[in-house]
Every structure is written in C-alpha cells, then in structure tokens.
Length: 450
Image (cartoon, rainbow, N blue to C red; front, side, top):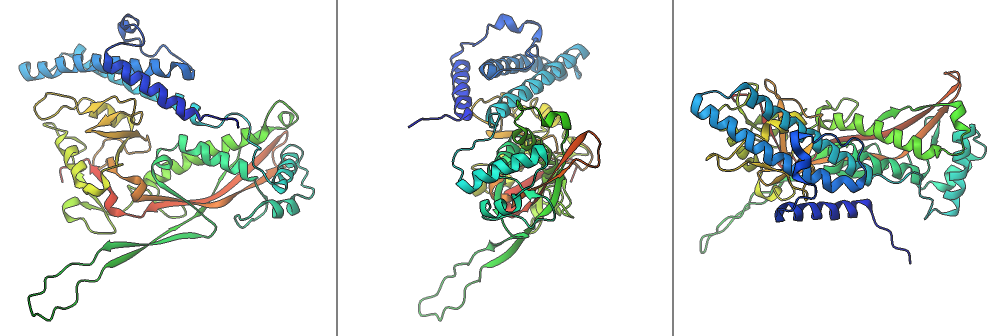
C-alpha cells in the first residue's frame, strides 16, 4: 500500500527542528548573516527555508528585546527615549511582522492541495460527470450534463441556473479557504442541506438544593435553553478567463478556477466573520451587542476596557489583557487563542510583565505563526479593527466552541461567454453564513476608559 504524507507533517517537523535548535542555542543560520537586521532579503521562499525563517524570527526578537529594553530604560531614567532608539524599535518590530507574514505564507502554500484535482475515490457516475463538466468548462458543451449531475450528486443547493460543480472541485475550495481566513481555521464548520442551521444551547443548568432532615423538599431550578439559528446567504465569485486560454491543454482549468474561487470566497467571508452585520451575510464577532464583562448576560459579548481612550493604557498596558484572558471562564481557556491584526500585535510585542522582568509575547514555532501571548497562541487576522477610539481590537476566545460557520452543500457554476467579448466568465455561487453560538466563549478588548 502506498503511503502519502501531508505537507503539514513536514511543517510540524520543521517547526520542531527550529524549536530544538533555538532552545539548544545552535542557530540554523549564522548570526553574522543577520548583520544590519537584513531579515527581509529572502523574497519568494521555498518550503525548505521555513526553518531559516523561524530561526531568523527568534534572532530578530532577541535583538528587539535588547533595543526595546534600552528604550524603556531611557524612559525610566530621562522621561523620554532617544528618537533613534524608538526608530530602531519600530524598524525591528516591522521586520518581525514581515517575517511572521513570510512564515505564514510558506505554511499556506504547503497546506494547499497540489496543482490538479485528485480523481481518486470517484464513483463511475462522478468520474463521468467530471469529464462532462470539464467539457462544459472548456467548450461550453452541456450535453447530458443535467442527467449526469443528477446521478453523481447525492445532495446540493437549489439551482437557479448553472450547474453544481463536481464533488472534488468543491472539496478543493473547502481545503484552500481555511489557509486564507483565520476564522475558517478556528471556528466550528457545519455543512447543511437546508436554509438554516439551528441548535438548542443550555444557558443555565439545574441547581442543587439541600433538604432538611424530615423536610418535604421541593422543586429545584429548571435548566434554561436558548435557540441558536444561523442562516445561509448566497455569495458569488466570478473569475474571467481569456478564450484563448481555454484551449491550452497544459492548464488544469478546473483546479485553477477552484483556487481562484476559494481565495475570493475566503477573503470575503473572513471579513464578514469579524464585522459582518448579519443582514444578508454572516454576523461577525464584533457586530453583536457588547457589554462590560461585569454585566455580561447571555445574548451579548462581554468586553474589558483597555483603560485609555483609543489606546492601550499608558501604565501597565498588559494588565487589561491579563484581565481579558481571565474574563473567559476556565472551561473555555484550553484551546483559546488571541485574535488581532498585525499592527496590534506589534504593540503587544513591546509589553512586559508588571515587574518588567520578561516579555509577554514570545515566538513559538509550535504555536500559531503569531507566536504566543500570555501563553496562548496568537492568530493574525487583518480584518480585526485597528486600535482606535472604542474599537474592539483584540478578541480572546475558544472560537471552536463559540462561533459556527455554516456552509450549504453544493457550489453552482454559471458559464458566460457572451457578455464580454473574447473572455469567458465563470460565476461561482455558494451559500454560507456564520454567527456566535456560545456567547460565553468569546471576549473582546475595547479601546476605551470604560
């Protein structure tokens, strides 16, 4: 039997090698190569350079700590930091951010399916449907496609024109999308064949009561339930292809179109999962009613104030992040992650504990590519709001338990070679939605005094 290995297996191995090397103090690349902080002269990176990138991230952070410590010492002794020191801190911080992006890009490329769509495991009907569908893509020939589609598909969306794409093409879109959207990696994803997903959630359990000896007893408090409903809505992505390209036999058109569609859907959905208002689209985590966590009630999301209007607090800025972490109930903290954009992470990287002894952020090859903050992985999502007045710039939560993405099975494709001369449009349509299903499992940091 032939054994195959996922690219993610090799990522884990590379991360382990880099972690061991850093812990043992044996750099994978010479320290001299880092002179002048030339961390960004890598360009397009092959997978084999992943360990080098991770090592450079570790080296860069050590340099960052040295320079930032000098900045903090100057502020303590003089009341201000020299401009050149501040500039150097900002430069290295930007380099760390760029290194993180390069590392994530390598992981994304390694995690995506190889060029071409796997034809293994198809039934005879599905294989026949795939051949007919490829003829439809290239030539627009839809002969017998309706009949073959009915035989090959077990379930699917209601079709308003167009054709359901083959199963393996749909699966390729599903595999690529999580490499683009952080929330697609973090949330619970459900596939349904109806217009909405519903679930009953217990919001409070039964309460025990004591019974005095010989007492009559009584009824204990009944559990309470809330109904969660997430609707799916239609979205479209429309790649255009030159007609001359359709005749190029060297191009795997189905794979290329599936990748373009996946990236388009993932980028649009990723924005909605953070800030979508739920009207004809997914409802994002920052679009619910928010209340001070001390007044938290089911149906709203609790927040902790940063302590300063439009910024982190000037003194002990990390204290509110510690409070945010502990505002999440203990049963949700295993598996919880931080969610923020790159700029916010750059600010958090400068934070130290209350005694000034150690940094609260650390690069960690075994964690998410954003490293760890206060021991929890950091996920980067540039859809998260930037630091500004009343912005909800940081989320901390167990998104697997707190947020659900719902996909309606089946993706429809409409081929249009009429409306644009010399090109063919491929209109992909999917139905999906998203929303919070457990309000206790997600907390937010609000950039405000209260």
